Image (cartoon, rainbow, N blue to C red):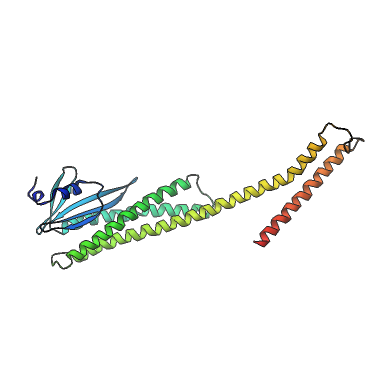
Length: 265
């Protein structure tokens, strides 16, 4: 155990060793503890927590693999470099989400939506919500740290303001992409409902046309005497003509009804 670890409270060491710990800034008499949680976008979304101990002379990063604090040197520059590197990578990798959403938007406009649209939408919604939630907390913690150290002459205020601005930029981007996803979902539902309404209308026309035909066929299919057109050589022809006439009249009636509905809307 290093000398600085003797100064750190046991509960704080447990917090530093917790890979799921949210962002937090805790000031103490002999040291300050800073934990920054950031999303990492690779093939799938992950999140890591960086734990720092800041003393009056130096800063230390908690190495989770070795379960110990490792000195970074300057009390403020060390944490700044670690956090800034991860934020720069996050800003670049977040563009992959933006590109996916743009591609989904184009497929909707061109009516070439893929069968996995909703699966992709749910995955993006889940990941970006998680990014937004993490960055909201991280941005607030960075603001607390800046306010606490801003009167310290050795504190590189502009560097940490730049980190906070990056956090806010990612947060705004996440919020914007979530709004786009909601828009795409509404657009997708509208297109789906429109196609469903067309299908239902087509089935309604088919039902309206064939219902009376089934009634007539069933009527003439009865094994009873005295049915119309049973005598003479043109009975079948007369029934067929009647059926065709009925189909035409029914179809025209449905079309007129449809136009009245569209006109009233």
